[in-house]
Amino acid sequence: MNPAAAVLPPDLAVLLRGRLSPSAGLTDGAVVRPARPEDVVAAVRLAGRHGVAVAVDGDGVPPGAGRLLRVDPSALDDLDVSAGGWARVGAGVRWQRLLDAAAPLSLAPVTGASPAERVVDSVAGGGVGPLARTYGLASDRVRAVELVTGDGVLRRVTPEGEPELFWAVRGGGTALGVPTAVEVDLLPVGPLYAGTLRWPASDAAAVLHAWGGWAATLPIQAGTAAVLHRPRRGAAGVAVRFTWAGEPDDGAAVLAPLRAAARPAGDDVGVRTPAQLEVTPAGPRRGVESSLLLDALPEGAVGPLLRAARGTPPRLLELRLLGGAVSWLPQRPSAVGYRDARLALRVVGGAGADERAATRACADELVAAFGPLTGGRAPAHGSGPSPDVLARTPRPAVRERLAAVAAATDPHRILEGARPGLPVLRGTR
Image (cartoon, rainbow, N blue to C red; front, side, top):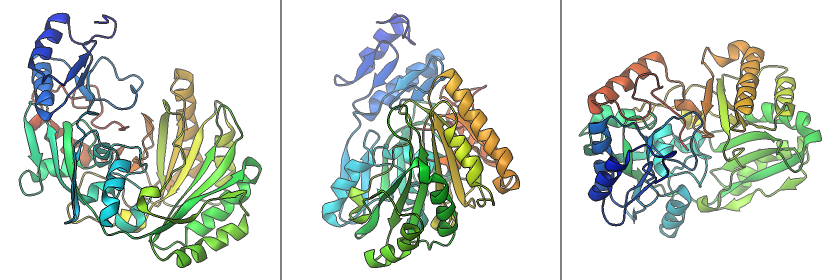
């Protein structure tokens, strides 16, 4: 055991190893890798008995997360796809695998922002994907969530069986339990007209100006985002993602005005299946982001955005169009808030202390520049790079309701975010 990394002392690490299944693992007394849900139960119960904080692990360690016993669900990778239009997805499964498995049945899930995200993470964060304006959020298409709550109970959470917890776990972050599986609806989605247009950084002002006016007129079949990126190495540039959930010829006609207004240097938009959707990289892999929500782009928005993108250190800015089905109330309400926002603006920078401070300062400057068009919504700071911006800063009533659910199912307050001094929500990865 590495004493510097260990969260569990040696005697508790030995005790936990004895309770895990043979295929499960425990690394350095700090990371549990369950092979089945019962391993999660064993880890959470031991943690609760001995006052050890627990978190769901991601692709990296969020900065400042503290000493936590992490549960890495990668090996919980069972996947069952039904021709009846649903799938049961283990906590370690990512959207791309589900997309590939559903494709032979001419079905597709409503995904989160990236095919590389875990399905359960998108559900916990809300899930604003490339088809969100047409079909809603990933969390809107959930049938059941299986998770281990802080009291060490493995629960199958459904709208009929546990309506309050079902409301909370969709969009309420990872402070309400350790997911082991989720059941989601699949839709008969046909071919899409989708891809990315790219320009050099010198065209950024013209592209942003054209994109702002064009995006405001789009019907709900269209999804789009404008991305300003300046990597540590390589050339800076601007990109526009476009997804059309309708006839390809109609999508080409909708995209034509943007193509004409600012002729792209690169253009791979074409007919794709849902499993072939690609997304612009979300920024530094170990990065941290701030985000804010807007009612509209103000006059003169291009200047502040360009200044933010050119700041140091290198960073990425993404403007994503919301509205459409994102703003509709789902049949089964969830903890996702601020669905009335029209645009999401993400600022993603590096994970170092100075870089995190610069990212936060950049977002605060944009809040000051855009003023009333934030609609009074507070910016969210310090989360790992997750595009699920809607669930980051819940309204007070939602936060209180989530805290009540957490208190009822986590008597020892061991789950990250449910303990005093930590927020109810964190960005998922």
